[in-house]
Each structure stands twice: as C-alpha cells, then as structure tokens.
Amino acid sequence: MTHTSTPAGDLRDAFDARDLLLAADAEVAIAAARAGSEVVRDLYGRRLDRIDKGGGDFATTADLAAERAILDVLRAARPDDGVLGEEGGEQGVAGAGRQWYVDPLCGTLNYAHGTMVVAVNVALGGGAAAVADPFAGEVFWTDGQVARVRRDGADTPLAPSAAGRLVDVNLDAPFPNAPGFRAVDLLAHPGFAAGFRPRVVSSSLAVAWVAAGRRAAYVTDGGDLADTVHFAAGIALCRAAGCVVTGLDGQPLGEPGRPGRGLVAAADQRTHDELMALIRV
Image (spheres, rainbow, N blue to C red):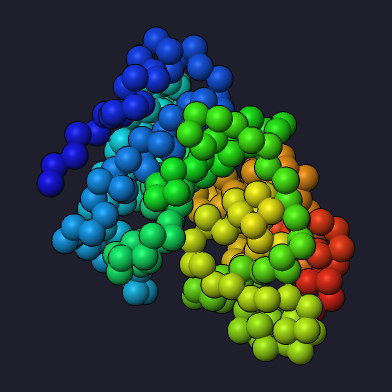
C-alpha cells in the first residue's frame, strides 16, 4: 500500500494550510499526532517491511509513513521550526529556535505482532504536546499549561490518580543505570509487590495514562529522557496535569548541566515517595 504523505480524512476537514499556520501550537500537535495515527490504523494488520536498526530494534514501513504524515503537518503549520524524528533524525530549519520531537509509532514491536498498544508522540520542546492512541481514538494533549484528552471532538481535563495502584515498568533494554537500578529488581522487591500492581505495556502510551489517572506511576531506566522523541510528549502531559516527574535519582529532569537518569512519573507525591524508597540507583 502506498500512503500519501499529506494530512487526510477528518484532518483535511479540520484544517487547511492557512488554518494550520494560524493554529495554536497545541492544535498543531494534535493535528500532527492524528495524521500519524491515521496511517498507523490504515496499515495495521498488513504485511510490513522491516528496517533493521541494530540491537534487535527495527522500524516498519508504518513507522516511516506515519512520520512522513506528521512532518507534512508540521511543515505546513510551522515551516520555520526544526524537527527531530525517530526515523528521519534532524530535519527542518537548521539551528531553529524551536524544535519538535516526533515518535511516529511508539510500540513498534507490539504493533508488528498485532497488539494495539502503541502511541504517536508529537511534542514541541518546552511547549505543546500530544500523545495519540490510534486505536482508542483518543488524543492526550497539553498547551504547556493544562492537560486534556480529546475524544469524539470533546476535550476533558486529565486527572491523575494513584487509586488503582497500577505501575507500568519498562523492561526494555538497554539498562544504563545497572547494576544500581534494574527494572526486574524493582518488580521483585517485596515492598513493590506489597504496595503496587505491576503492568508492562511497552509503549510510552503508559506515560499519558499516568496523567489520565489510568496508572499510578510509570518507571523506566534510561539516560536523560526530557528531550527525546520517546518521552518528551508524555513528560509534558504529566507535568501539565500536576504529576510528580523526576529521574530515577529523584531529581528534576532537564536541568542544564546535570544529565537526567531515567524517568519516574507518579500521580502524586505520596506515590512518588513510595517508589523512590524502593529504587536505588
């Protein structure tokens, strides 16, 4: 199947080129995430070519096509901005004062094996962001101040909650903070089992679920994740929703001169404190 790299369907109805140029950054992020989501839905279940990225990682033709669709929206709406794409790398205006972070299909392995747990992430550094769930028809978004979910054309405020005690833990390699921190050790800790119920989604969609109150927390190993295509959108959502967001060391993310270490996004301070008591980096 050949997919054109232009916003399609309901996106064409919602925006023309002039509308995009005049739209607020949050609406641009939403439109871009929805454009990528449409491609992901259209190609689901088809036989897709794989592009090896090394270390067991790969992209599919759906990842590439979704990124093209997202880039078309961003180029039309914000032609002077830079873009960092998961698949295409640095694009757009070199040295631009504003940069967008794009992960067109977070959960590629899930998707390639017929599991509908994926996210389309679009974030403007330090500003608006959107995380789309292609199969639930939801877009979680923020303008940097408030956090909402758009479903069936209506926006509802996101409300973090730790009531369910569900904590998503990313088990994907590599493990840069080992041996001080390994996710499997956290899962095996008696205190974790006593206080929380583990989940493993293997998509940054779970970070948006923390902002939405569907998860009590999300924990992942990693380096400095504040400005990455995988996590920038989810982190922006959680911050705008009022979650507690730090690295594995309990320190704020994105501080100049101090590289971050992984991510702990919690619905509230109590949940964050409980998790930090179990985490040793």
